Length: 417
Image (cartoon, rainbow, N blue to C red; front, side, top):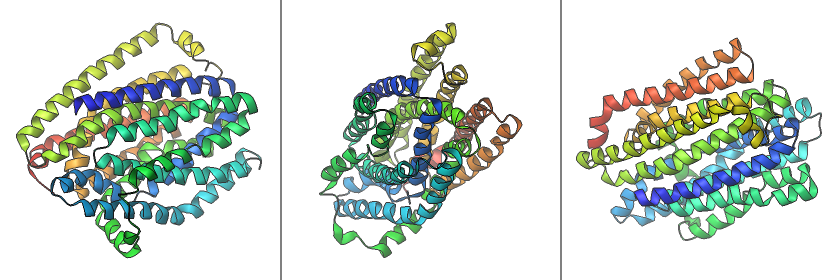
């Protein structure tokens, strides 16, 4: 499994390099006000991704390997089909709110000139949400490398290839391509899962029962929106478009960091699900994962030290000097990466082994801390204030997860839920 995780990290690194090159060419040559539209799409996509997840896929991540070990393949088909059904159902519920945001941004921020693009962004966001569901289904069955490779090709390689459209036809064509670029991945996942889906399980009543059973899981995901993405929504609604452009770059870098960390450590942690109830083996796995974590933190600190030698040189090197607060953004990314790594094992252990109710309680505590942290923006209404808010949120999440894990460790390692 460690070898498989390193392969996934390698895929992520390739994707990250392609992502950085894309940012170099696109963000580096676009005006911040135009590049802010990428940030608006990200806001829409995050809302759809979060609130269309009704917990069925999360249940699968926690249980499928256990079901497969016990020869219960039909249950996997049932849950897979109803997971996709739940995404469509939830999207239709939140669509009116999304339309309000789209019309607000179009007429207040862009003088009524971007409506078609923003409406297509809704379509692209829902396709991405379906891809996310299918990716989780594939991962829950152990297809980590396939899922990561497919996502990397779609999210990074395809967008990198889209640079040709950008240079040939300009920013507008590229932005339309960007919001709809998730379509090829949908086709790939459909063929991958065609034998894991069955229309006989498209039953709203049974799907809603699963959603109710998983209520603490999806409610925690909804609560996590404030921690993960509410900052982007706030910046897009309240700040000028040139600041939105800078913050969009920050969120891209933040997502790159999260993708690498989660692509590696989530695989290691999820693979331990098959050891449920085997305390000694889980302790051995914990020690192994934490050793790797310490090494990665050391690498991040080393890279941060190199960047600190001449920050402006590196910012100019990546063609981003026209954007505000880039030095602060890079330092913030390094800091939250380290903080995220410090609590990552504990966060995953709670996610995979704790009861849904305990996961919900963790989400509720972090929600309160996140709301309090927005006071930083009220005191300092600037991009620096928003960056400090992000550091505070990551710090609170890691510390709270570590405290809960230490208190519940014996229970988590011995109970089969």
